[in-house]
Image (cartoon, rainbow, N blue to C red; front, side, top):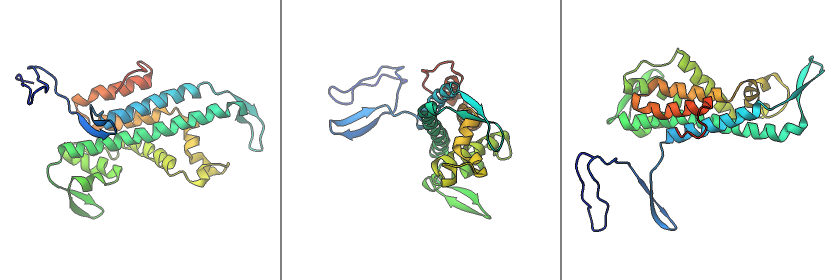
Length: 244
């Protein structure tokens, strides 16, 4: 604050010059109105994704397999004694995937609400549509990344770049996780290799969160690097207690 601010009412708070202002939210609870500092939706989603993926990664490193013969040749069998740990691992992978994608969605919507003044034209299919903020926030996330944010932030679309590929990879796993098809739930068919379970066993779940961080970083400004770096620190194991 630039100047002292006296109490607005008897018993109310007063503030000295230099005090930091924060936006608080008020909700009605059985105990009465409760004020609190609402977290950044992007930061909290990234924090959940980073922490759960890091937990999953530690569990994944402890799995032990035994080579056994099969009609298709030698396969690696995970002991049935580790089934409980494997299911716990999948739970954390599911959470990490969903919240990693949610972080991108929340970031897009925040940028739209914070930046858009009035309406803007968005090219959809073969024509342009004039849309307001609420309409734009309901667009698919890929359209926000390809069409909306680049126009609002005056940046080139990431489409066709490595960043876009990372987004598509995360989107594919997230969609398969949220809309889990029957042929992805069990069996040994070829399509099962495209299931979320197969993805989680082939690569570290932290890679999915790294993709989300990279997509957000593509559009972010200097003031947003703190919680992006916080998520990266959790993923690298530098500071497990960090809060992005």
